[in-house]
Length: 437
Ligand code: SDX
Image (cartoon, rainbow, N blue to C red; front, side, top):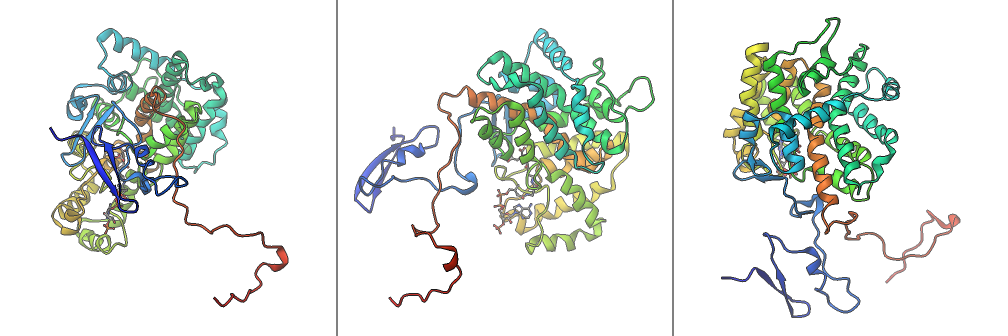
């Protein structure tokens, strides 16, 4: 049986080292012994954007990017999307197993119990301009919850952690809906705890004068499936932020707000909104080839395409395409779908995309569904943040419970000036004749 180890020869010193391999990785700290002398700091790894660096060990989500596989706690995403509700999957992601019927009933009751937000939080929202972006409002308001629950800073108290987790999962849809209502100048709709998680969210968004909001069951189920698909995705950009901010023992509200900020970027969760803008810009199916030429010339990115991990079809995109058909049976087919399908058809055949293994990701079709369901594009990333809060919190708890984790503090490769003496003000900017060597 070959040894699970690397043998390294340092050509500078001709010293050799044996570095053990565990789970397909070596410990970066094992490289520090590789020195040229006693004053040498030792070798580091240089990995901008963490292209090949595992920051943690995690048991929550497994992705095989080459095979297009995604599993939460070992369960294939396809089975969970088909058979579960979002809160059922949230329980699985957070606690490691699918809940029994009594556990699920209690869990749904606990989340439902925490859907209301403090009246002062509503006043906080009223401070935003009418055209404030919902993600900016969401991240700020979630951060403000930190001031409402100061006990949340006791991050090592499991009971207090569980309470904040339930509060955040319960309140995210409420805050999200309130940002939407604020932007329209509509009165806020209080949570209706007789409704399911997604139906209640739809009620807080769209209920007007009717006594009780009745969600279309097909649309409510589609939204539940979309929430399941967005719940976690191992060490993506925003989850990395959640873990990093959480590693300083900041409270979960401020860590979640930071994660939401990261998600808002157009390269990450903000891509679903950008996809809609792109489809609107293209305008019609016959204009797709010209647009693709711009992408291939490097002028533009094809939003909703490509992924750091998936070098095959994002399994979530396939499920979203299936859900889209169900939604369009209710809402009518979106003309944007034809443009999206044409973009996909060309991309899957064109060498530029094939060579770079660029496939549709989770954001490519989600925006089309959301718009067909009546959501405005600027709230799409909020729709991503609501379910991803579950993944952020599960990863946060896992980090806190990992004895190997400490405050996140990467090293750097310094490329700046060597030591130099202070330059008095009167001498700055004065051309100094460079000494002739
Ligand atoms: C999400 O990490 C996660 O898991 C994220 C996520 C989650 O659930 O949390 O899955 C959610 O964020 C999905 C991604 C949404 N973003 C977009 O759709 C924006 C468009 N996609 C790209 O910006 C890009 O594909 C990324 C950011 C998603 C991934 O970028 P990488 O891994 O850093 O890849 P790269 O930029 O190094 O690209 C490699 C090559 C480059 O070409 P060359 O320099 O080799 O010539 O592929 C090209 C890129 O220019 N490329 C694209 C492209 N994506 C990559 N070219 C055109 N259009 C694109 N979308």
